[in-house]
Image (tube, rainbow over all chains, first blue to last red; front, top):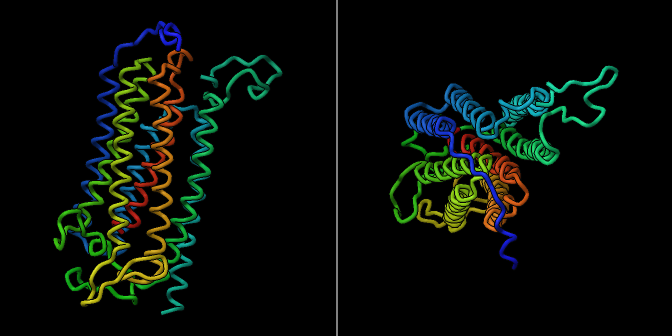
Length: 109
Length: 241
């Protein structure tokens, strides 16, 4: 292999401490939210309230992953809504099917 | 920023020459692929929600819980095994470790993307290696967990294996959904590890230095974060609720 091929002159930009600290902060938030979920898993009784809290915390985590790690929050608004609006319909689908499942359950039992 | 581009009078920014969504073709297609993949995972999780909500839930005390076909099992009694600690009930500990591993590998991925923006090849190599390691660690944990379930547990003196059609924990659908959804997610993790390795290899070979940008790291990074995102939902709906 030609040796000179690999030697491209590249200007490495030094790391931006503030930006990296922000990424670690998001990681810390994800860790803390997960820790809270564990605490709730063992201290609360099973029921609709517990489930609602878990779903709310899951959405918080999802928002941080998509918004910060995947950088969607900083993209053009058009791209942002192109991704988010279809998912809102999916949430509706979830609600509708759980409702349907409960109705099936009430017929079966 | 595409939306701030001046567009000549009588022309739309959709006529070509500018990116109305401010992202390259490849990145945009990765986003829409991930949206379609999100539909697939949503379909699986929604079906799981439908079937589960049509079964009876367990309403008694956690301590008094016994595995039964009559109701859906509670997660803290199903997922209580940890490798090497046989017979010790440690609910949700192993899945906690798995979740931690996947979140950490998502962090190292985003650090690799950040290093790529700075054209810092050494840092990209370092963080990509950590990410690959995290992915392999997660897959190994999952293989261990699956082996435990397939191997089975002792219930009332009888040894029962878990499979797609029957399992010792509850209704047959419970294990069928568990294996199918965590398996589908695990396959995504496996694909992600392969893609991450490809990116690492290209980085080491200087492909992106010659190309002048590290956008491939960013695109595969989007995929990897998506895998982490799906796990967040799988974790909630299988292990917590």
